[in-house]
Every structure is written in structure tokens, then in C-alpha cells.
Amino acid sequence: KQEVTQIPAALSVPEGENLVLNCSFTDSAIYNLQWFRQDPGKGLTSLLLIQSSQREQTSGRLNASLDKSSGRSTLYIAASQPGDSATYLCAVIKAAGNKLTFGGGTRVLVKP
Amino acid sequence: NAGVMQNPRHLVRRRGQEARLRCSPMKGHSHVYWYRQLPEEGLKFMVYLQKENIIDESGMPKERFSAEFPKEGPSILRIQQVVRGDSAAYFCASITTLSGEKLFFGSGTQLSVL
Image (cartoon, rainbow over all chains, first blue to last red; front, side, top):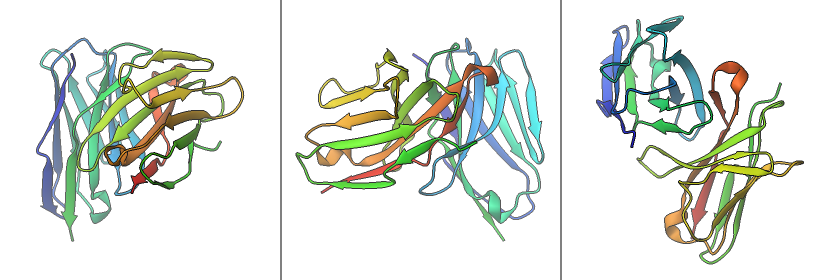
């Protein structure tokens, strides 16, 4: 059974610092890994999707890496801003047509 | 292209009543997931549906919960005889395989059971 863990559960940084969010999964046989952002009381917004054959994906200040063999992914957010404050969730999917298994999320607070 | 639409946004029910949550996927998407998020917890998979077909319901409680995705109209998650423990945010997501299994989530329905 796939288990996804995100550490730390919460993170507080001053504005301008780079953020590093970690995600680990127990079964390396994945189809893809996705990072989402969730604002309080809102739904999830997809940030980045990394296919199993890829090592990283980038979008603006966001960069996500994937090391499938060690069961880890890292989301980097450069030069954090207060607007980056949210909960960030990673999720893996075993195969096309399967369900996503989510981690518990990392709650980020960027202080001005 | 409208996103995934869920309604109602908030739903209040008394214990023993029925709750019906609706989800309209993005245009052109024929697969829908339902997830539940309890306070301070992560998202838990409930059910995965294709039009007129349940693909995976391994996350659905065995009693009181049912889901459907008819040929026409939205997907419905139905909870009969609600209890306080059913209070949670219920999220729907739709998917197209054309984007490599990328999920698009709705804003959720917050169910409160009094």
C-alpha cells in the first residue's frame, strides 16, 4: 500500500527566503507525481506534474525534482512572498486510471 | 472553459438526513474522483467514476455512501442518514488522460452535520 509523507507539517519563513518542501513515498512504482497548493477553505490548484521518466519540472519560481528510486520529491520555491502562504500537498499515482494518494501537506507561512 | 463545478458550496444537515453533493467535471472530461478531507487531515480517496461506471470504490464506506456519474448530468455523491463524523470537505476532481493524468479540482462542498 502506497504511503506518502510530507515533512515538515508546518514551516514559517521570512519573506525572500527560499522554501524547500519534502515529499516521500514508499512504493517507487509510480506513474507521476503532482504538487498542489491549497488555500484555506478552497480547493486544490495543480502546480507541477512530473512524469515518472522525468527528473524535474519548473514553472516560474517553482521547481520540483523527482528521485523515483529513493522515493522522494522536493518542491523548491525561490524568493518566497507572503502570497505563497498556503498548504502544499504532493500526490502520487501508481498507473494511468488509478487514484492519487496524497501526503498530509506542509502548511507554509511567509512572514512579511 | 469552466473549471470543475461543485455545488452546493456549503451544506448543513441534521443527523439522519440525506446529503447530496454534485460535481460537474470540466468540459470534455469523462472521469471523476471524489475525495474527503477531514479537519486537519489530508485528502482521502473515496471513489473513481467514469460515465455510467464505477471504476474504483475502495475508499467508500460500505454503508450509507453511494456515488454515480450518469450519462447526462453531474456526478452525485450521496450520503444517507448523515452522522456528525461525516462533517468534512468533499472535493471532486476531473481528469483527462490527454494531460498525463493531471487532476483538476473543484472548490469543494463543506458538509456540516448538526
